[in-house]
Length: 276
Image (cartoon, rainbow, N blue to C red; front, side):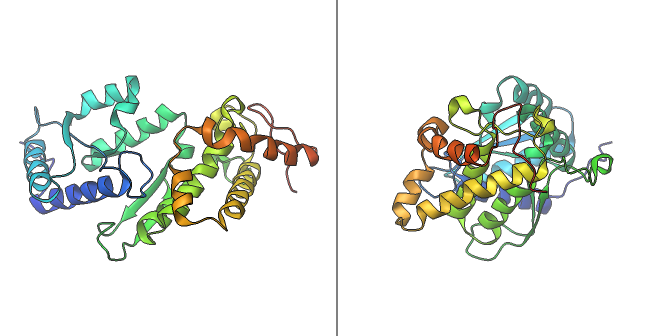
């Protein structure tokens, strides 16, 4: 008996969202429509569960008929879990799976990057990118963490990146979403590769919630000022520069000078002074 039940319509819905996300994301991960669709990995236990055999059959059919341009790969969930730790870049793209496997793999992804505090989430009520408004609930993937409530030390990155997902999937503002993501990247990246190197406690640093949030806002503000007179094509080209050394190294001296002028230090083990 296999009580792990999924109906064909439920699986079709999940597969269609995965295919649409892959097209929207693109292999470059920017979602600007300048690259082929991202790869979709379908995780199941077709070697054990009858429901997983149905899952694999239905997902394969949906992609063959509706998303022939999207590369689909099947992987047993336990095997994918192991490979996610040893070779996470292999799964750059979209992972589609059922609720139980997804719950475990998403937490494991937080371990790969060091913390759940940088993982956003989107609960969508439709399929993004179909020309209609796609409503959703956007929030950090982690829970409420009542043990640190009110202490001002929570990592705000997941919440900030959730706003980027809202812009991308519900509002269709892909370029604006990329700018938020690049601002977060700038703040978190080590100084050696052109970032500010600010980290909250869950990432081994000492910056608090306000300091990380303010740093992201300052970087984003400067990016928006710099792009205000640029044409869309130039903005897209800047967003596509994948390596942080190329996009941030020259700018870093400007940000460091601003911070130094205010008497602040930066680096992996220091934090900006609190505003209050």
